[in-house]
Image (tube, rainbow over all chains, first blue to last red; front, side, top):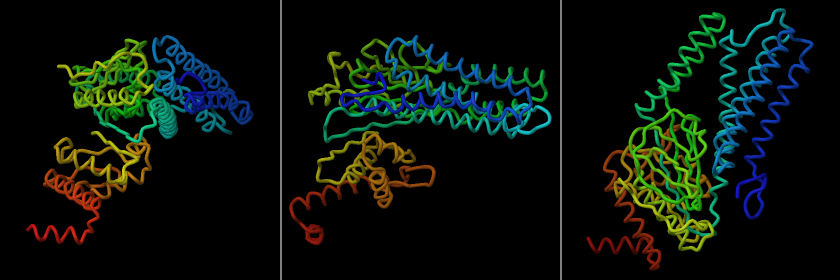
Length: 326
Length: 116
């Protein structure tokens, strides 16, 4: 089980978990050290920034731990694949903002704020994207390790599909995130004209997000099912074959969430056909999938093959109830 | 799309991967213009070397079934694709059968010539 720093029957180290812990601790320590190291060359106002961003980082970690604690099932996979990738981006944002503040004010006569410079806001946005990618990479590694085939079979099967957003996702994204964010940006820019570069960046990112949209990959192997969103808006989840109780085809609509629910998982990027898997714990996991019927058949076949091989992967969850449904 | 390989098979893994794509195209399960999974992702999931997948994709490109574009990955070609995939699949099966029976390519060619 993937429940601690050591995983599996042969006690492999859980590298993604160790990576997340090391990255979080390193970022917080680096944030704490920045001002003491460069303090003598900085205006006194930067101390306020230091305090604010450290509080922001600790609050982000706190919220992440809260979301993990309230999770009812598959807590460790939820932590590694959903919560920690999100929190590392937030903690990284705090560090990047403070680092940018230090660099922009190094030996400066007057204090300058990062959000007043388009270039620095862009650099911070780039670094946050880098933190997101680090979280996404570690999350994907965690899912891959979790679903690694435990049966020593020479036969390997992989079913892959990719899902892209449709108009319904864009409309929802625009209504749920775009409109409130646009109003907030407008409010900030009107009250603090100096924040115009930051407002411009945020608006550009929102527009780009809506235009490009999200996409997700769905992978079914003998090990289980893995869904990964390319960004975090679609969420992602994974289930081992032992955790799968039943699967069916359903019709689903996108909803504005970050997969931070207490049970189950959603990665619904378009209206229409979706694969719904009920876990042995009762949670419902849904992913948009035009080829959902084919996925159900493949899932049943691979589960049947595992059962025939007498694999321990299946566990004691009873016979598969996998059939396409209207 | 389903990829299935057997690591203990006599058939090289790249050829098994290529055969999966051929079958899917011939059956109409993969439409012209659709994108195949990136070689890195497929290699990771199949637990094989990335170059093995790239070799399979390269073979399919040489057969005219795929277009490999820099930065866009492997895309199923658009013209006469299903019949071409079926024919290539049959030829591969024929060559494998000839190998098993100890026939050389020249002997196989002669045999085909006499049947014409």
